[in-house]
Image (tube, rainbow, N blue to C red; front, side, top):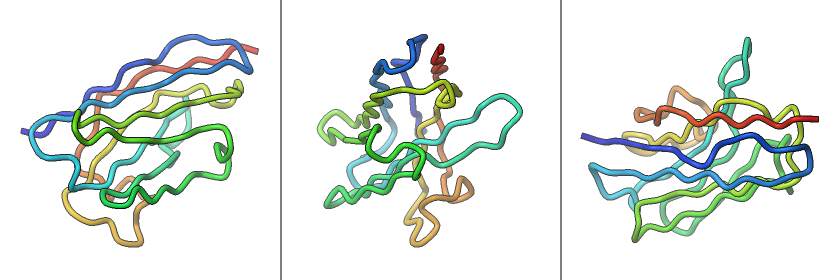
Length: 126
């Protein structure tokens, strides 16, 4: 049974930083891409960042490019999201996600991902 567990969310002032973690179990995550999505109140879930399984290719949403950094430690089956220069508009529940197989060109679409964590709340105050 595949499980993803996020941690590291919290309340931070604008301009601050947080690091989210996503620990996976139930399979060898080093063989799969991973992604982070977020969902703010009243809004649809949106793509944040993707990392491939092999050479660590990353893709970021324009809204977080230059501020967020994704990384992975395959030995620990864990993916990290370092978030710097946080803005109030970054406030959301953040979810990590893993696909069943390859997403191909759909790496930014939530529908590609079969497994989701429970989410961790990030609140950025102004």
